Length: 140
Image 1 (cartoon, rainbow, N blue to C red):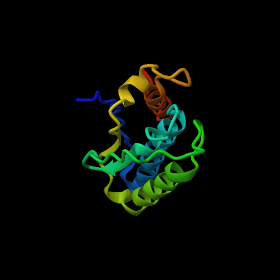
Image 2: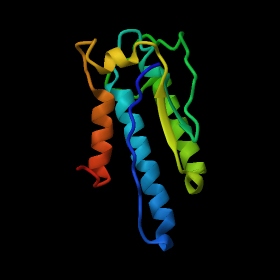
Image 3: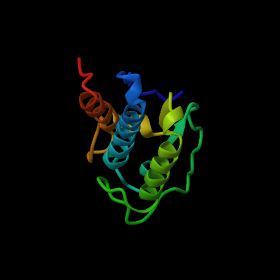
């Protein structure tokens, strides 16, 4: 079983400003999603293009053919850019019903990449979560 990276963000505020709270939660989720995609080291592009954002239930999808020539670390182009834009639209559409958002990557070696197997980058998921926590004002 692959390890999981979790961040709990509790957004509270005036219930009369619920729309602003929902929008803020969506922005935090998209910030994490963007940062893990951009931070993922790239060889074939398979790991970068297998990030998935889902609501309420973690995705179990894995596309072994998701590699893409020309994919570079630090960008949101090609397939990963399309997935990012689709996820943002999905969250906007369901903004009022968001309670749990899962960001997953089911490539078998994602944990090794996170731990520094590639010299390009390491701890990209952890750093994305820390950045989101700081953005939310929840850093301990």
